[in-house]
Image 1 (spheres, one colour):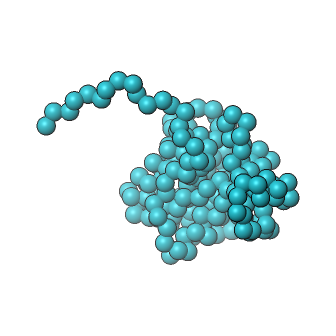
Image 2: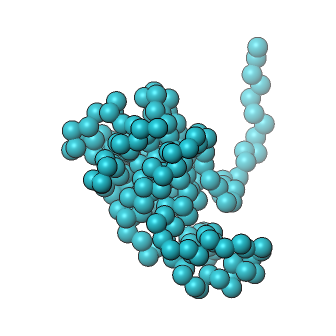
Length: 195
C-alpha cells in the first residue's frame, strides 16, 4: 500500500494535535485546549495541509488517535477519520496512545497513561504479563508516563506508528475505551417512533 503522505490527528486529551508525514519530513501543529476540539480540528487540519501546499486528495492515508482518553475527544477524531477516509477513498488507521508512546522504543517497556480519579491506564510491551501484580512489579522499570511527553512528539509518534500499521490491512478505527463514560443513561423513556 502506498503511504507516502499521511495525515495524523488526535483529540484524546486537552489538545488538538496534527502531524503531516511526508517521507522523512514531519510537520506538526498542536493547540492545547480543554474544550472546542470539534470546532477547531478541521480548520487546523486545513491549515496544516495549506501550509505544505497539500490538497486533501493528495493524502495516501489517515492516522487517528483512538484513546484511551477523553470520551468526547476520542469520538470527535474517530468520526472525522472514518468520514474523511470514506469520502477520500483512502485508509484510516487507528493507533492507541500506548502504541504511539511505545513506537520505536526499546522493549520491555511499560507505558502508563494518567486516568481520571487518580487511576492509571497501563500497557506492558515486550514481556508476557499474566496479571495486575506483574504489571505493578514491572511498572517502575522503563516506565513512561504520558505527561512526560511533548504533544508534538506524541502526534509524530502516532503518525509513525500508524504508517507502520498501514503495511497490513487494518479494521476501521474505533474508539479504544478502558472505562465507561461518566454520563448517566437517560432516566426518561425514549419517545415512541411511529411507523
